[in-house]
Image 1 (cartoon, rainbow, N blue to C red):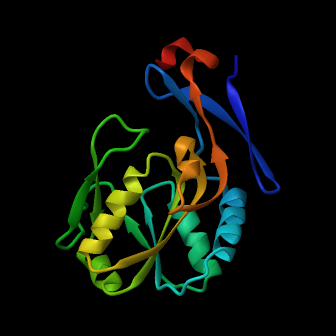
Image 2: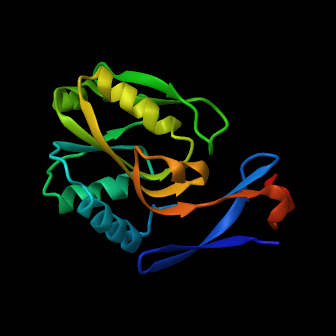
Length: 191
């Protein structure tokens, strides 16, 4: 029985715990937050792959933020935009869209502040995230950005989980398998 997964991204290795997400499936839990070395390395490698001119990086709150910040710095961009998962009191006329993710139990929202919408209107956008799985978050993000008048010209992620490794519309650094719950060792309190 397997309780962890050894992830290799270029020269870096990480041991990820395997956690159940439903009655049949488990994932290797990848958390970019706090891993400055991996965020920097992934940003370098992904930024090298960008071949089209663009204006801004956009990411989804929260785990994509360190990647977007590093990629912005490397690409010489002063700003990047974060799609939030809830409306904040400081937001001016926010736009929102619903999204369902593999790692959340409830429907979530992606929210774009009008200030950011004004900034990206008519601009070329590169969407970045830590992990792409079903692609639902990226589709919702792109729909929201299109409503704001921006054009998504590229999608980049550190990892493609499960069948996302077959996608042709998103560039990524490594694949991350999904696991059958029958094949992994789990803590009984996690179900």
